Length: 308
View 1 (tube, one colour):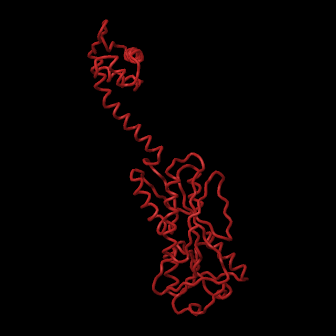
View 2 (cartoon, one colour):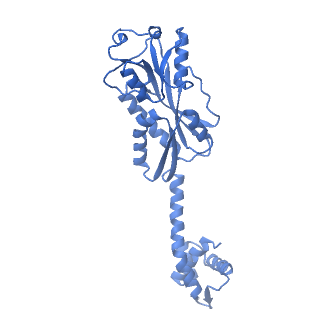
View 3 (cartoon, helix red, strand yellow):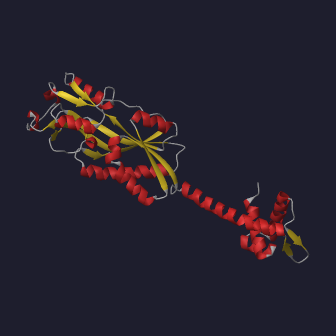
């Protein structure tokens, strides 16, 4: 393979017609230029310059090689610029994982601000539950994962992952308009023992958290509908088919649904960003900082959400 340094020296010599002038332009000594040209001649196995005591003359081979090298050297210069941009986090690809409610409420502001500052970084988004996203992150298929955990449901993240808290969400009680518990000044978990519930699927963190909360209040929730789609949960509550306890990011205020908080419960869902401690470029921490800033805006707009 031809040495790009030698090719760059060749083009300078052909352009100036002199080893000495090329050396001054490149910042080398004339001897160094002569040695590089000799090395290039050995590599291509043809003479590139005719030499006499006081001058040199480029051979047709040198003219041809210098012309062909011009575009290649420009391409290498462009590659150097790209590598510098990649190292500085200004160019490349960032693979982000998230779950639906964060994708809807938190990511738009964070990604918009990030894109404004890093227009040449391509962000690819994949959605899933925390266990799925953590596995992709650990295997190097994601650079950043936005995940959640519930109080009362311990979560051990794999070693080697850096955690950045984003938001803490209160759990909101959703009731259909006209429900007897809409008006009382104080609502406790025990008041809900005889209610019918709409909740996330069995085995989900939200369902497990609700079961453990109710166990403390000495009852088992009677569940009529299970769905991981919070739009579905809200519609069933609106229709009077049950009540629900949902994280604040998952709730969109709507006609026909009243929200309350439980006076005797301070259980929350915590949203955080994960990235690997090693083997990740500079883009990941910068994106996470943009998401953290967006979380502050979300907390100001959405009742029940606090920045972490």
